[in-house]
Image (cartoon, rainbow, N blue to C red; front, side, top):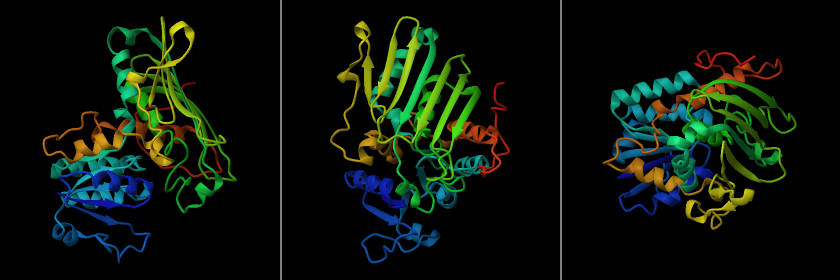
Length: 343
């Protein structure tokens, strides 16, 4: 099969690295509208219907800035190409619904990348809380203390509501998705957002208190204002025990014998052999790509289909919509199932 990667930043390069090892992939084509790649082998100067069919492209990966996701996903699915989209899937709920409709009409895959669902630690946590333990959960505490310095936001799209969003939409969306994946949809919430306008337009600190449909209460605290990437973690407090997944990318499973935390290596993964952003990405992309490219798997084992993942986007829209500030612009959304904040 022949593959197309749109966007050749950090994520695009990571896909390229993984795909080169796949024996079923014959050619990898790359397109990036912001880079002059015309003279390099397999880099496309433009993409249109003719170039897709001429190069026999069957699957595509969208790793562009967030505001371009819909533009390329719509074009590709309409031309009957299977599409995998980096988070967030799109910035607009109505656009997400349009993609879902087109993918059903063309019978092509349209998936979103939430790689932490595939982490060994997350799957072990999911198995642990299923069944009788689920009823004993009374509180879930999630936090992400990361660093994004001012130079990170000097790009023409990072940290802006129209093209990216803040810490919730960009970095902490993985943590929010994991909470929904493990504990179900959110029915009520309240929130506090804080802004460092010297760095970015959108929020760089957020607190969400949420009630899930099954009655579980969770709290999410996320910031990119820390001085380095400390951790991303989920603590599950039960009546008779405490469970924790932590590490830079939710990769370490911890138990608490005698009230002291101990890393269970059998239920954890180490990303220490990967430097920088690739260490934070973890190993989930390998598993996602294998499923996405498989001819035998029409559905994702971890429910990555776009139609199954509207809820995270709905939460983000509801948080921004309900947070009242006159001096910022909002990602516009007319639809939300969450309603107003709890009073």
